[in-house]
Image (tube, rainbow, N blue to C red):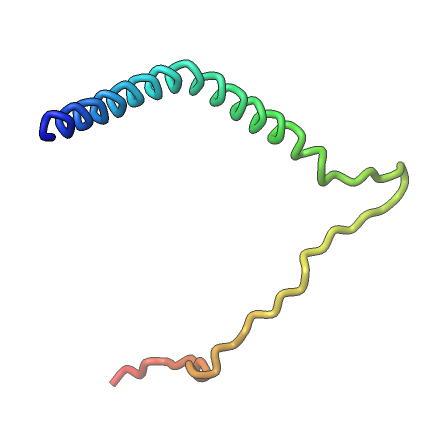
Length: 89
């Protein structure tokens, strides 16, 4: 009975070690391929990005770009700022 358990344990350890080395070997082969593909996609997207948001303007047409009107929220709990002068005595 104990011998069967020992053989099963050794078999499990052997499968785990073998799986680890197979995975390590596959990652060594596949990782560079995947990284090249990801780098190529990122490079392609970065090259397309400047052209994506440009609008074509006809010659002689005037275009005025404005920043959106953002109003700063006042923090009413702080209170009003009062400028003061120091007095010389």
